[in-house]
Image 1 (cartoon, rainbow, N blue to C red):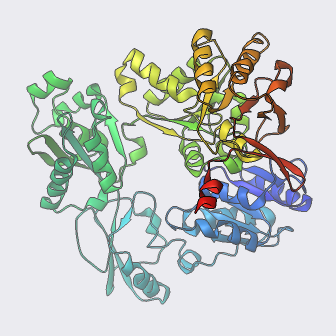
Image 2 (cartoon, rainbow, N blue to C red):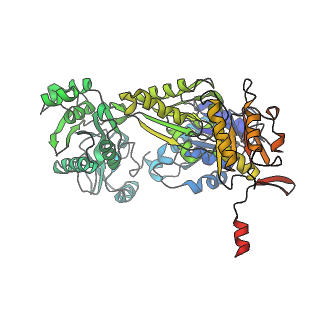
Image 3 (cartoon, helix red, strand yellow):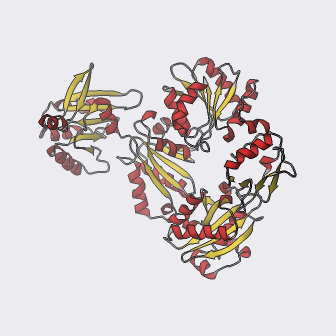
Length: 597
């Protein structure tokens, strides 16, 4: 998730206030409404859409504007208060700072920092935060509340001055130090890794669940073994900080399913790291060493995650195809610093470039990624989503170098987004990623989690802008012969023309390639009239967007460039004028069918 705060200014006066706030928040960006501000770090045209995109990406939002604007923008997106980013409203003159959302996820702290910079007081409204600087139902990351319904009553007792006792069995409970707990009291808050019942039980992340399994192990078997192991030892699942194993299991579905079931990350160690734990193992195995290069996977991983001060709380338990052990570090385990996470490569299509045409799934993948790889022009189009993230750029013709770099970075345990324009699977980088995986068969690449997130393609964008030209059967053909022999392209053009397909031509011309477009036109003219509508769509969704409709017999290389999509209608495609502009559509027969009814 991108944690770089976005300070939103809707006027020039608001921009001045935003700069004062930015000075107090190193790394924060000032986003300005393009029609009313000048000089912002990032400009936007649609306030509501921009706010929703930032919120969906998990960006902290500081709006120098009316609170109502922020509320109306993000209200449709409010689903989980535990996951929402901070949202704050600041008066244009800096006279008030109000945290609206995410009070316990950074908004209250941000409000205080901003108020200090502006010489004002933050309007923090959460009672527990006002009195004690905390909320028992919103503990720090990694902590869990066993019985959240009880937190409100305990907090009410504390606010009323009634004695509440704190008992800490494990975990770093320093965040509770200023809460005014008593040495004795009728109500008790217990911090423990054990599965207990009580007025209010908080579970710190102190347990490491080490696992091993055979290749292709059934996920249900591993999950059942883990849960039985914890239950038999009287341990709470909510105190598990991470599921840990050896790196050769980084692609094992059962391990990731277990981590997902427990709501914790899966982390992995090399064989050498696990072998270093051999002196502390209770059940070392020469058989395991011969197989994977260490004397214990489940116990070794549990101990490695628990660290030098940790202990093996539960020795290895076995089922038919799996093993499990539990390590304890009473001071707490930071899962982000344990082992390595499984690398992930997400190939994303950002659409033609307009933010409104970028899917929420793509925005989420970009916001989640550790690093971004792509062509500079494409990264510039998404700068508001990837601000502050490491980026790797290469030239337009260096596609294989980009994909290879993305795979290598992901293999190091990073979450990498590989960016394409349009749709990543249409004449774009998703195909090349899978081709490299197939061609080189490298173990470190094969362990990666790989996903492809679709985007709005050029053919969809062009069709939407001009009406409905692909309302019937259509196909796409790239006229570039750099990777496909021209003879093959000619065969495909002839087949598309004879089949009366609507045809979208990608890569129609270049400085070197000039004869392909006339050849494609002539192939179409053999089977459809010269009056057939042709849509020329350039720079869709970007500055300089231009759409023209010409006749097929007017199509020449001088009319297009590499940024133009050429969309050739079939024999039924129509050009009409309505509302003072031209529309192109291809009937599918609905009207004729209804007329016969």
